[in-house]
Image (cartoon, rainbow, N blue to C red; front, side, top):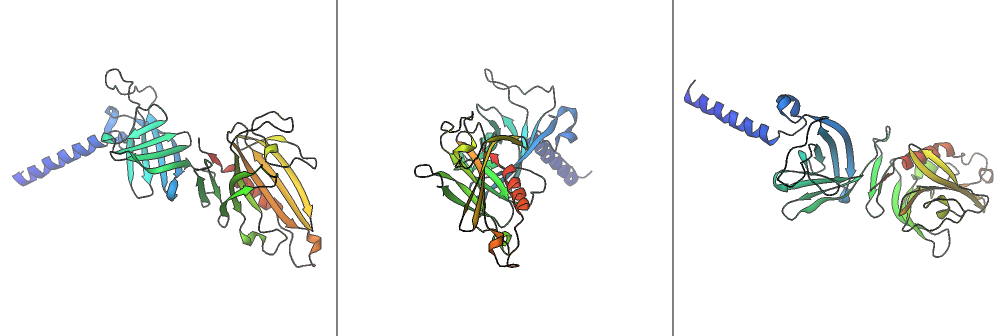
Amino acid sequence: MNRFAATMLALIIVVGGVFLWEYRDAPWLAPYLGSGAKQQQLVGTASYLCDQGKTISASYYQGTQGQPASTSASGMPPTPNGSVALTLSDGRSMTLPQTISGSGIRYASSGDAFVFWSKGNTAFVEEGASSQQTYANCIALSNIAGQEQWTAFASSTFGFSVKYPQGYTPASYVYQELGPGKDIKGVKFTIPASVATGTNLASDSYISVEQLPSVQPATTGVSGDCTADKFLDMGNGSHIQTVTDNGVDYSVASSTGAGAGNRYEEWAWAIPGTNPCLAVRYFIHYGVIQNYPPGMVQQFDEAALLKQFDGIRQSLVIGK
C-alpha cells in the first residue's frame, strides 16, 4: 500500500470514528453498533404545530427494558437513557439524547446549543447561548385515520389544537347569546359556502371551541365543575347527559330555536375537569324547507354535517 492510500485510509477511519462517536446514541444507528451501544426502542410519535405556522415531527425512543440510566456527576441524578428524533419545518433533522430536567422531558445537543422540551401535549425549542425560543407554544396534533389531509389549527391563547376539512374558515369570536356579562370567547370554524349552496342550510353554521376563564357553580344541580349548562340556554326542556366518545368524557346538552321561518339547533360538548372550562359548540342554522318554492333547494344532509362536526371535535387536543 502506497503512502497516499495509507493516509486516505487513516483519514477515513478517523472521520468514521468521529461520526460514530457523535451519533452513538442515535436510535437509527444502535442496531449497527451491537450490544455495546445504547439499544433504544420507539415508544411514540407526535406532530406539533407551533407559533408562526412552524411544525415539529418527533419520534420518541427509550432504552430497552432493564437497561440502567447512565451515571452523572457526583451528587446528581443519573441521566435518562431516552432520545428523540426531530424533523423541523425549516428542513433540519437531528437526534438528541434525553437529559436531566426538573419538569417535562428535556433533550439537548452537546453544549445545549439546541434544546427540545416536551411536556404533556406541548413542546418548544430553545437555541443558542441566550436560549431563544425558536419554536414556541407548540401543541400536539391528533393522528386520527382519515384526517391526514385535513388542515391543522392551534391556538396558544386558548391552549388547543384541532383539525378540520378544507374550506372551513377559522376566526376568533365571542358567543353572546346568554345575555349581558355572559360572553364566551373562542374560535369558530364556519362551514364552507359550498356545503350550503343549493340547500336550505345557512352558510353561517359553524363548529367552535370555546373557553370560560373560570368555572362557576352549575345552574342545573348537575354535579361537576365544567358542564354544558354553562354554554347553553337550558330552557325548552334542555337537559344534560354524560357521553363518552373516543375515550373522552363529555357533558352534553342541546337546544333548538325558531323564528321567521328559520330553525336553530345547538349542541354544547363541555369537557369536565378542564379549567379553564373548555367546550365544543355545534351551531346549525337552516330554513324551513316547506317555505321554499318546490324544487328551489334541497334538504341539507344534517347527518353528514354532524358526522363532520364529530370528526373535528374528536381531533381536539388540549395543550397541557
